[in-house]
Amino acid sequence: MYSATEKALIVSIWEKVTPHTEQWGGEALERLFTVFPQTKIYFKHVDTSPGSAAIRTHGDKVMKAIGSTAGDLDNMSTTLSSLSNLHAYNLMVDPVNFKLLSHCILVVLANHLPSEFTPEAHLAFDKFLASVASVLSHKYR
Amino acid sequence: MVHWTDEERQAITSIWAEVNVEEAGHQALTRVLVVYPWTQRYFSTFGNVSNATAIAGNHMVRAHGKRVVVALGDAIKNLDNVKATYAKLSELHSEKLHVDPENFKLLGETLIISLAAQFGAAFTPDIQAAWQKLMAVVTAALSKQYY
Image (cartoon, rainbow over all chains, first blue to last red; front, side, top):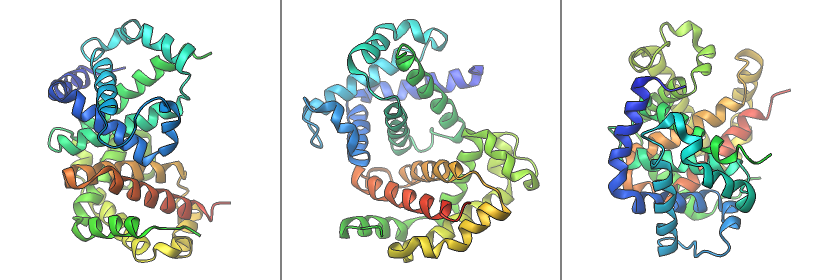
């Protein structure tokens, strides 16, 4: 459940992310692979060395997918339906990893938007990313 | 026995030298109480902690946040023996304060986020990794004396 204020916070923070999805998405993934190296097992086919073009491209994709839900939070499962299928039937990423990536995304936001990423914005975003994770894993079983 | 590389020690001490202890503690504890509101159960004697504005302005929250980060300094001074350094604190949290150890993880996360906000680009992925390891070691040490 999101309050109107939380929805507005998510949209306004996301507006600031939109011009930087490749760079910040890449940074979130780089933090994920550095801090939680076990997550690299899902990326054996990808060049996960710091600064790689593959990480930036993938980070861009991830951030844009998350962003696609920001304006219509109540319909997240429809917006992410095919990604939800992908994660359930192809990728089968253990859901614990969604929390790890969410944490790294929050670190990137705090890092680049220190004044906008207030405790209230942090709360709204933590809920938002948890919803994304929940939708991505809800067809798992 | 925790093994720290020289780079990890350097990452921890170089950031610690620049940390604004009161501000980092205040940010981290405020964020725990706001983002995970069920943690307010431990602060019923702190007055009004029922909303973000009240929490951020609460001087007991500020003082307590500072106390926690000051205590973190003890771990940093004793990186090779955090368990022994925190044995009494661990017992206190279990026997007197009755704090669910899950909360140590939450505060560790919000402290990392507060440092990311303070340090910007200087808080690199490698530095974050060293600090996350420190948070894990601190969490394990504080949980050690439980039951």
